[in-house]
Every structure is written in C-alpha cells, then in structure tokens.
Figure 1 (tube, helix red, strand yellow):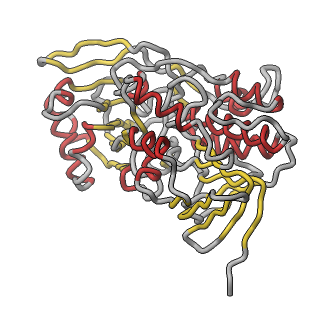
Figure 2: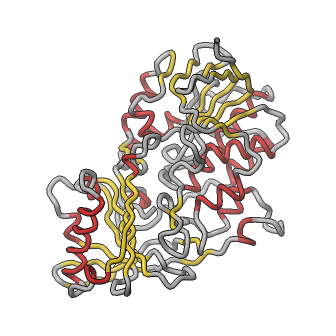
Length: 416
C-alpha cells in the first residue's frame, strides 16, 4: 500500500531551540499557516537535554549557561515587560561567578571572565522550551528526514519511517554535523556556495562529565593550563565547574566541560576510564581528595548522538569563514531556509541557545513574508513581516561571551 502524503504550508525539520521557536511563532502569530515539526528522535530539545535522578536538582547535559541577562527568556517567549505571565516571573536564575582559577606552574592564578553569565536554579534550558515554547505545537517524533526534494513547489520531504510530506516552504534546523554527513539527501544537490559554507564549519567534538562527591574539595570554577599545551591542540575548551552553584541542594557535583581538541582523547575511552583520568588529575592538585570522595558519574558524549553528531560549531574570525554564515542565511529558491545555532539571525554569535531560537524566528519571519505576498528574500537575511519584525530584530543580541578563548568568545573556547 502506497504511503499517504501529508500536505502543509510549512515543514520545520528539527525540534531543538530553532525549530521550536519557529513553530511557536507560526502557532501564536495569526498567520493561519498549517505547519508541523519533524523531529528525528523521540523527544524534543535537540542539544538541550537534562539529567534527572543523578542529583537532587536537574542538570543540563547540553546547553547550560544563559549568556545574556535572564530577560532573554522573555524575549524568546515574546513577553512584554509588563506581562504578568512571562518566563522571568516563574523561573529563578542566578548570576554566575565572574572569575575562574587556572592551575599553571604548580600554582593557582585567578582569571576574570569578560562578561556576566547566568544559570538556572533547579531548572534547565530543556525545561524552559518544554514548558514555555513547546506546548500545543504540532510535533511528529521519530521522523528522521532522509530526503528533501526542492526541485519544484511544493517541496517534498521523506522520513526514514516512510512518511511523506509536502510543503510550500521548509525550515531546516538540523545540526551542522547532520548536514556535513549528508544524512539528508537534497534533490537537486545543494548549490556549491551553500555546500562549501556547510563544510567550512567545524562541528566540534564534545563531552560533559558530571561527578558526584561525598565532600566538596574543589574550587568554584577552574581549568588546567596543561590541557591546552598538548601537541596538536588548537581550538576548544576544557573547564571544571561546580554544577551545584546556586542550586538548592546538599549534593556535591563537579562538571567537566570539554569540547574541540581537548575532547578528542576522551572519545574512545569508556566512562570508567574517563572518571579515572579526571580523578588522577584532581588528586594531583587537591591532595588526593578526589578518589576517596568519588561516588558516581555520568558522561554525555554528544558525538554519539545519532541526530546531532557533535557539540556545537566553531569558525575562525577569518572573513571567508564568517561569510559562510551569510551564505547559510540565504534560501534555496525561497523554498528552503536554514536555521540553528550555527546561523545566528544577525551578527556572528553562533553556538548559543538563545541565538538558535532567534535564528528560527528569523527564518519563520521570511516564510510569513513570502506567503503573504511579500518580496522574495533572496540573500537578504533581514526580510521580516510586520508581525514578526519585533521578534526577529529586537532580540538579536550581540555579545561576545566568556573570554577564556572558547566558542562563546567569538569562539574558540566556550562555556555551554
């Protein structure tokens, strides 16, 4: 029996921050557009996931920090500052520390972050999107898109489970790792400039390790200079931090965030080998207190996530590479649009949860403009309808965050 085809105005591929925000705008803005989110996995969130049961508070195993003042949560939700029902009315956050310590030449040296970041209290990025953005959205799970035919209108989309869809417009928010692996077959093939732009990105390897201890013996935030002095290490971050900072908890949980080159040697290790390696390093600077206090651990290896294939993207500050972002803001014949953490709505602040959301919003705005008879977007990334313009433009935050080198910093070392 032939598979039936569902026809819609808009299909959104991926239920991460970008896809959910795009769908949120279609749902709550009076555009009357039929739309559906196709999510490859069995749950929403993409790289925004949480760990429960490990500690007496939820832990972000993906995106974790809020790299803007917490009012950015209201901006994503599009809540007016006077609205009594807005995220910041219900969600507690705390300002993160402004300094970290670096172990170098057998002594601790205090360094300062360049900006003020924030953390959720007994809450996560996953909770935010699950409770404030995703309710009432039309999401189809376990529908991994394998083929996208944009040769004519409507666009034809096929999933690995055999389901088929057509739509006037498609917003692709799949990770850059998925696009680089050609997990989605584009028909015809992607134009040379877009394929080249995709290949320009570095989808960094990434692991987050969480370790519970009987007693706390470690500093609030720290790193080891030796982690960045290994042969062949050029980009990335390895950073230790108190996961329980600001939480209502009696648990002692240390997090190890490692992305890019510093993460590579851990990718082939077992979880126990990872714990042993970290404990040995900690014992060396904390007088042997780590191993006897260790209770249990948890490893989140983002490279192993089938529909992600890495942590997040990085680019150099080379003009040719940054031009890749401009290229990815273009559409395929005004039928297919790209969005996500690698394609910020404006500027070059890639790699952030909030910028992923605004990227999805900007793509949705372009679609609404076209379906309402507006001018084709062409290569203009700022085309928006009046209903969406405040969302897409006023919430484009341009800050370089953290300064210890990482991707947040405009990137090469970034606290996520």
